[in-house]
Length: 311
Length: 311
Image (cartoon, rainbow over all chains, first blue to last red; front, side, top):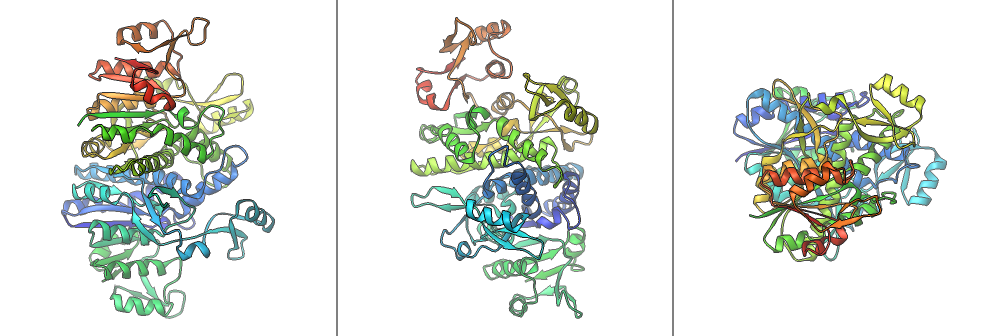
């Protein structure tokens, strides 16, 4: 069965400027899942991955706010919590969309573990900010007491930074593949999955890190035989000179050009950069295309009238 | 394939007197999952359900502590979060146990929705306490602002009470059954599942309630063709006159006697009562047996030397 991955950005679930109420998150999830029924009608299987940036941020803030009353959770448990909460919202949104469209298909969320290498270079240079801002004094104390790496972020205070290692194996991939081959809509690798390392005896342990959702999605696509990725984010398409005067949207983007522009620094790190990088890796390893756009423009983008198609 | 449900009580995951650090929860999860490998070796499929009482309590406390900074979550989202976090812990514990035992089987957690009736009597008489204790003033304010029902609980302050309606349908049951028929260890209906109601157009909506884990487990067992339930809790077996001078353990308990004792008030509501009730319902609808004991006594109980067998 032909299959597509719908990859929903964390910023498409809690949009910039939104406070992130559950109602708003549900609304955004419904909007992002609006085409699942038509993919199924077209005979295509659907796997859904999603980011969790703003959501896990809220979980970490709650965790810190209550640390005097209840034992704090490591970051990887917050990740797992977010797979449950966001998975539920997306799963119910898809279920409801299918009911309204008169399509009968099962929808499930699989809590997903992603193996990373213990000696990944990212562990010696953590750079992904998570959780609340702290004063310098608090930051120093956390650095001493918890061993966290703290960094000044955009002049607003100190934040914890964690490693973002490369995903090596998606532990639950065989079941994800099997279910999706059977026509089940599967939500998986939420927030890039819960990062785990493999110990010498092959057992797994959680580790405080963040796996980039787009890299996890690429790995999942490769492992499950998916050829197309629809990457939904907060920006309508890939631009050249995004911040500059010569801003120019790209409707189509060949991998060779993508690599060239990337090298030239056209795509912001932490924003469009990793999406384009993940798209290049996907296509070079056998993928056919990646479409990058917003939930609102999905339909137009599939007709070639919006978004960016990387191929 | 013969199948067993391992049903892990919330109080077996965070034990009374424990603060509930993640290390302790992992330790308890590992202990509760210690027999999964031997069930699989014996040719039996395994589905795991679990409570979330103390864990979702912690999530709700975190939620309240941070309500000034991040939008609060409804209870059903906290439930979904706990399915992610606890599911991850149990799934990794089982995975590791299987690796150590040299058994190859997949393990997954499915975020589970449980349909309840909107006109279930429980909605007009909520009685399940959740979350932190409040002062009378705070309680009154919450009652007015949020419409919460607040109740004085055991002289320690006011708590929110929520309805505990009967589970009617486990939305993801077909996939749970299929996976478990295929030999996959499935963790599902965590915390009794996320309670949802079915709207007129057949779509689902989350609702603030708590589904009793043992009732959800019974329903799941019926729906998936499971004949035996191993119910792990904090008390080693079912007792007559538990709080009294004539305290007497029951090694075996026929359904007729169970019903008689239940009527006589031998089993505490909110503790052994609902477990025995759920066991009666399970056996009366075609189940073979329910074994109630602690994780530490599982092996002994399976040999008839500990716990209580209801049949």
